[in-house]
Image (cartoon, rainbow, N blue to C red; front, side, top):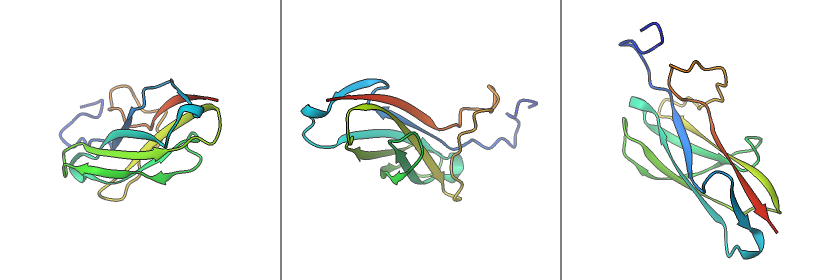
Amino acid sequence: EAQGWGPDFIAPTRSRIDVPDAWSSVSLGKLHGPIEVKGIAYGGDRGISRVEFSSDGGKSWRDAEIYYSGGNLAWSLWKAEWMPDAAGDYMLVVRATDGEGDVQEWEEDRGPFSGAAGLHQIGVQVTA
């Protein structure tokens, strides 16, 4: 209980990117449309009301589509389309908003035993 797992523990809002793989390489010249980015989000007993996706390391955000919402206490599935502007390294980031309107935050100083909660990010390399 001293580590935050007592009877009053509230599961933090979580989200992650599952597709594409971290540090995958994509050829801009071979793309025939946008890249589909997919993942999951969880808000404990509060559910998930919104998922946002960033392709610039979290500087700007756009809504992702929640295409399966299992309701409270279930993982929601989300997807977004992303078309890189140019060749280079991109940092893709996801954040979720729970059913009470609380937005997931970076939380870099969160203790190791308090549950994963920070924003998930992956790098993607785009070649010409």
